[in-house]
Image (tube, rainbow, N blue to C red; front, side, top):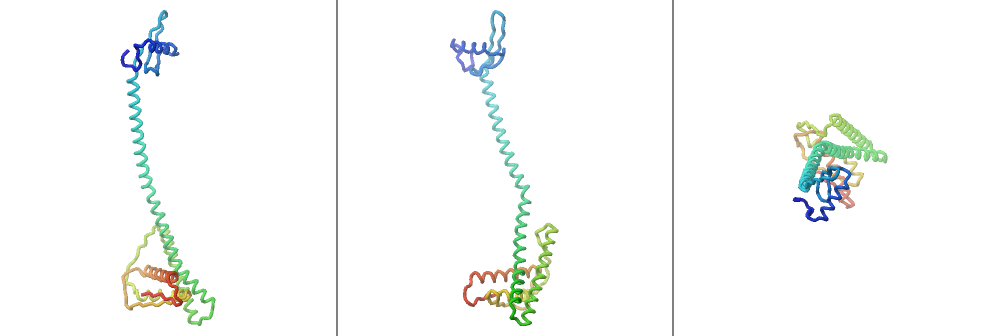
Length: 245
């Protein structure tokens, strides 16, 4: 009679337990309401009943289940964290490639837009007419120069696509920066004139640097293109000038 949650000294409780046990279809089983495991034997003239307290067993089982749930939850969280780290590690090259592709497209668009703008401006000036033969020859020369530069840019982009690399390996050698700057200024003079701007340059002679001539030329064209755009945005006087030094 000891160790159970039920008061077996109470005759009414004991009677209820016995009746519940006698009504069970199986000869052995569990009475959940009283935390008892029973064994029933029919002896003909009488029935023998045996009970075992299972409250401790149930408490231990609940404790084990609680521990298992905590361990399972911790393992699930650990697995989730590891999965997130592995997913980031696996997608990092994809994200890097996507970022490089966006940078590549932006740089290519900027570099192709500058010579294309010069070509369109010179072509429009030629179409309008009214220029002498020397001016027309200069416009045609600028168009040819910019077309060759666009072809070189396209060939470089194709080479980058074939090698699947966004890095440019520059070959450094002495470059006449003064002459390169003067040659880069010529195609932009009609473009500035078309926008109502005056392009004034001050280039010192004999400036030599160590670098890649093609890359330096592209940088100069980008600076000239930006100067033309910023002059249009920020300068509103009747006579506008853009100084390049």
